[in-house]
Length: 276
Image (cartoon, rainbow, N blue to C red; front, side, top):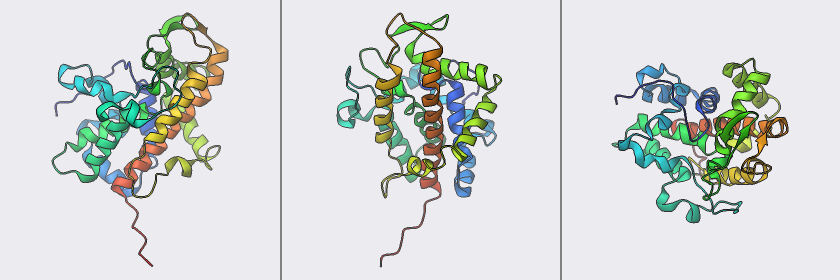
């Protein structure tokens, strides 16, 4: 495929660290058959690590031949509409929810599809859909047009949720280490959030992927937490950071759990109960 693995700056979706964390968490919840299938599909340079390629869609989306994928990273709602509707918001199926449906279907039915690309797209978009401002308002482009300060740094609201909260958390609480942060999230999944994990994993019967509720959660969180107290020109500091960090951490964890559950349903399906 001629793909390269290198460091880049993401402008949509969780930043590189957020996507890495989602996929690292997901791989730790793979069933045995899923792990075998994923490692077989991954490009050789990933060395069996899904997290190594989870930001690939951000790397390629600005290339002319991949520009059609740009709209697949988000699904915006009308201004001040704090709810999501597929028929209203996902035009011609070209949005993050439509993309998850499409690429999980490719992984399910395979045929002539490029399964490596499908896997990398699903893994990335499952991260994107859990970033609240990927279901933000059309008018401000999910917070990209809201210019403000993060402490003393000029930035925009979307980038705060992509990168700044995660970077500040690593510096303040995790010894500037992404691996320490991921370990902390895995510990919370095992203990503090253990009772929630089964509901996070679940989809309606006979559905491999169910991203619509994830999008609904994100726009609700965007209205309640991301946009609140974040007007243009505002300086966001400790109050905003400390109250929003738990949201960011839980969304990363949910993204990992749901990515694993989706891939497990595809590659390690449970046998149907025999009819009585």
